[in-house]
Amino acid sequence: MPWLTLSPEEWTAVRLSLWVASVATVVSLPFGLAIAVALARGRFWGHTMLNGLVLLPLILPPVVTGYILLILFGRRGPIGAFLAEHLGLVFSFRWTGAALACGVMGFPLMVRAIRLSVEAVDKRLEEAAGTLGANRAWVFLTVTLPLIVPGILTGMVLAFAKAIGEFGATITFVSNIPGETQTLPSAIYTLLQVPGGDAGAFRLTLVSIAIAMLALAASELLAHLANRRLDIE
Image (cartoon, rainbow, N blue to C red; front, side):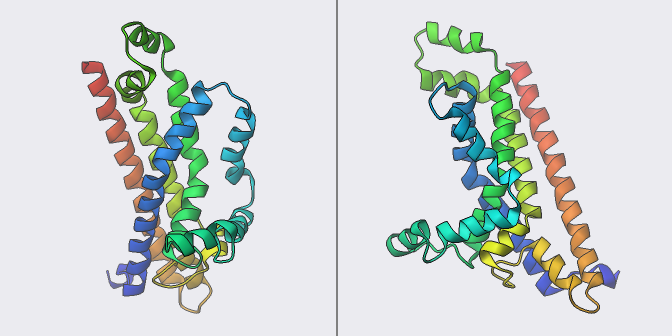
């Protein structure tokens, strides 16, 4: 059906959204895993503050989060200026900034899912491995990590889905530049503002739903395979 055929500009928005969401999820994962384990197992000063900072993007309006990112990571921001000068890494009005904004917005969901998974691990299994002479790092790699794989996958999918649908923080931080920062939500918003753009907005809405459903199906499949592997072992 011709009315369901995406235009080149719409395909560009789809590809950019998938790329930005993938980069945001993969780059966030090591930090999310480390913070989730620290919150689940650690007892340290500032624990409550760290947990609050992690959850802050869920509480703040996305536009506020985007504005904070612009202040910190813009070309004149303290972090953005340093990165641009010393590493050549620019975030403002670039796809890298879109990935950063999406990663920040999806980070709380990732951390929460992984943290719950870590807290569900029986500590006696870890303690048993420790009594056999394994150090804490080895216990985590051989005992804890395999058990929390389903939680990690769930966190990644939640972060990816949030990144695909992120709008407020992204458009505030990196604007809505076609081919550079215009992701699916931004493209849909743009099409709704022009006469005759309803059909394009509808097409991209269907694409967004399809991506979300595929991501959830992949998460369920991977979690099922991971649980089966654990049952066999």
